Length: 204
Image (cartoon, rainbow, N blue to C red; front, top):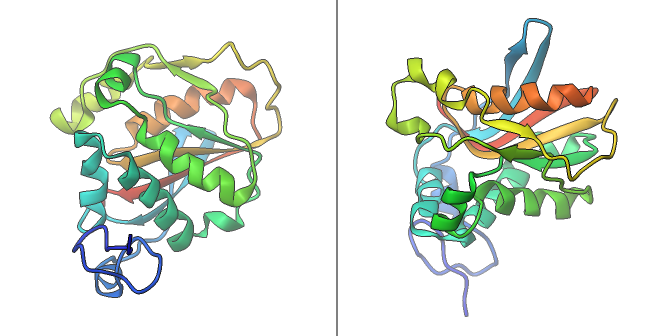
């Protein structure tokens, strides 16, 4: 089957996610440092703001389109500097089991799968989501920190030491950063050298 653009559905002459015209619609943004604790911050890499055509690929998870998440991973690799990061392990933000059962896949896992293959580094589910949270987009920004508070715990299945390692945390979208901070605070107990974040889109 010939390749088609994931947004405008135009036939493509080469294998790619988006056509040239749709790629030109993407306005790239610079990385941003966010504080996790008073003494620890992490850099967030993103392709662009939460706008089309990437917004359409992110929303595709709502109708269980795992291919769109895989395509976001391809674009994240192509359009951000993460290929130059010296990370040791890739960690996708986990879903609560109820949301996973409803959706059928974890979009962060699909994105991370691409990055791991490209970078030749392992992916580990170091985190478990123990709390069934409300969708962050459905509540005011002032309530989002409490919504994800204590949402994550370390996965006891992995007993390897990550002290002094560089962890790359993966998700599809960052709005206020509350989810990423909550996850990073748990990962800090492993005493990593550094935590970086890669998301397809970051609300600005």
